Length: 614
Image (cartoon, rainbow, N blue to C red; front, side, top):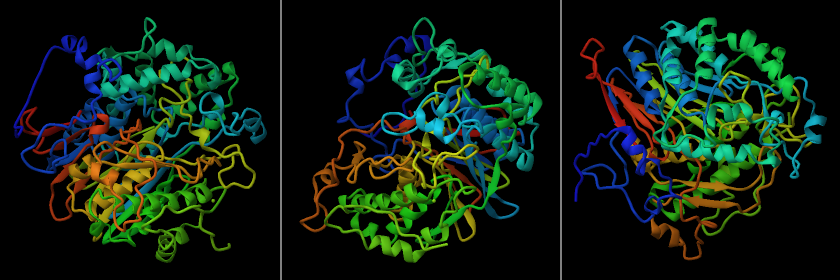
């Protein structure tokens, strides 16, 4: 059967009491990896939908309210930056499992006037009053910084990143960008499926005594009503966050760091025995940085330099470029094997060299050089797994939401924002309605490591926006969510588009692999072999096949089911020879992509095309 169209609407209360409010654990019919989606009349057989096209802009985020608001900002004459800030504020309310004003923010942006890709590092620093000795004294039994509590908190950088972007590229009044988020936070919005799942998981994690969270009453006051977290379809409100947004909207971006909010934050940490102060907050400023790039088979792929892990995508792609992946075949065992080996090599350098550039200068030019990529590629064998894997020897001289917007003037913003692990540290300042990130967990505690903890230092960062150009024109604004999955997923998206000629939505929907293992920038050793997880859509023949020479083994320890990473993203494509914008989402996190098609003077409701995925 070829599926044509299925549209349905029902009262939310009726649906919330039935299937839309059940989890896989509650409903076995939802845990059926042998069942595939319905057939489509054209396009890739595995694709969940076609992409959304727009003539005058497009937006793709992980929440329908955020995507809708971004389009409304574009219709009102706002820039891509205006739309992205508005969307991010809504995501902080509707998707707090991934982001919020307690986290950091990184950006790649195509400036159509300068005709270049710009980079913004919006990551915060560790508290000046927290020493390395104190971090070591409080380390967990693995000798690492705890994942939760005050030791894991660094200064939130998101709001200043928004402010920095708006000061340079904003068109609409700053306060107008927060009006939709304030309205939703006050009036409430239905809880979406993935958010309900992860809020429940966070509540259980925060309750464990071994996580050493100083207090959870503030979290429970916002998120736990009658002993339960919100379920899918329930209307959730956060008036505390609405109040905080009003203070930021009226006082400007620096109101978060120098005004009433900063005073409340300092009092809170003093009360619970933490370290963030008003001085720490006031000292924070985002930094414009020069992005790095490599050429992958004619496409220039861009990434942010350390302290982010953006170079890992570029390094992996340069190694992959040395092999004929197209000849190996899409989703073949050989192609996956070579991709995983490239990742393993790149990630050893990631563990060794990526750190705050104010404390350590990574050999970026060498890491991205063609000669180094060729030397690393020569270590890969088609018939075996490389063991052991070491970082290169440098020559002498260190959870998340992604969204993207394009406007009618040609500006494209690739933006990623995160609280890091789940909802964050478990700590919410009194009455402000948001949670602090736990990004400080990603420091190392070993002497001599480039990423070793120090006061007023930026930790290694996993969040990385992606961007690609071709012939000096913007081609692709894209990203992937989920810790160390981000460079792995980014490399797979680029390879699927360049090596296998997939469309944007098809590349987003294509099955992915994720490798977990090797050394981490924290100094942790996850084992030399690691675990390779394959999404359920990877062909069964690939799982069984030895691929290539008869002696080639299958990838190590392939998992049958999709893993629990939120490996979703929001690619957005602008064809270099057309004015149309193409937006695509992915099914892993209910992402919504809208393309603005017609002029805003037309009747409301007719000037955008929506493509929803669940």
